[in-house]
Amino acid sequence: MTSLTVYIDESGDPGVRDGLHYLEMRHEWMTLSACVIRTDRNLEPVEWVQSLQAAACSTQSTSLHYARVHRDKRVPLCQGVASLPIRAFCIATHKSNMRSHVNPVLGKMPKGDQFYNWCMRLLLERVTRWAEQWHLKEKIPLSPLKVIFANRGGHDYDKMFGYFDRLRGQIHGKGPTLSGMGLREPFLIRENWTVEPAEKVAGCQIADAIASAIYQGANASSPNWDMAPALALKKVLAKDRSGVIANMGVTVWTLTHQAEVPEPSRPLFNSFGYKT
Image 1 (cartoon, helix red, strand yellow):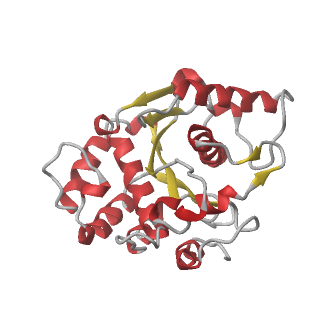
Image 2 (cartoon, helix red, strand yellow):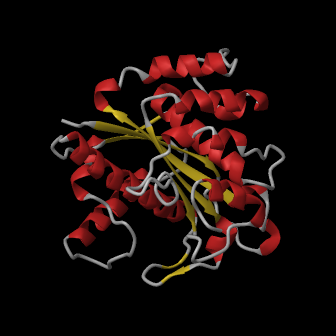
Image 3 (spheres, helix red, strand yellow):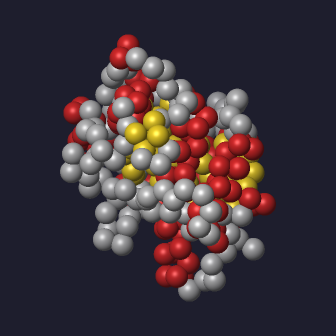
């Protein structure tokens, strides 16, 4: 039995090409997002997406894709997302900073798939931390999360799941211990994880809208740069116990004490509680 369902999708490319040639290009950001709902509402996202498509005047397709929504309709779309009974989380990573970052345990930033898995770990740490607090507040026994990953072509999900098995081993003192929030083990049971095509899963389409709006707001080098859609999501972005979105609903990585956020992107993250 699960109480919460998590839908996950991303925006941007996790590829990590070497060299300064790519510095400050629009490919230097990637966002990974989660949309969390009560499991007893799992049938409702289909209707939610239909309403969002109507608000965005994007009804020609059976699925919602943020990139296909006209730019002047993206704020209404995100206002619609912010009206839903969900909690949203996003990891925003600036890859130029990450190239020079060295983790004292894991070493330098790895390539492609491993980098994506690092970001997924950060995302699920925050989702499981919030889920633990939610269960306690609702006075509901802790139960595993149902997690649906939007299928990203070419990614090795078996290796990613194996990576999370190793992270769970750290909880029991097996293998290297990494700093950070840590995963809440009771919530991560692989039998409740599936990988599905995003166009077939309405919840993943909402996660895509969240990831894409924050990507658009962070990515100052893009011709479509606009912070307004991301700011329209504030109502549903998860907060920590102090009521702060930064490092819970929205996390910028590398963390601000490890590297500087590019100056044009700072107003967005400052609006979520960062002091960049």
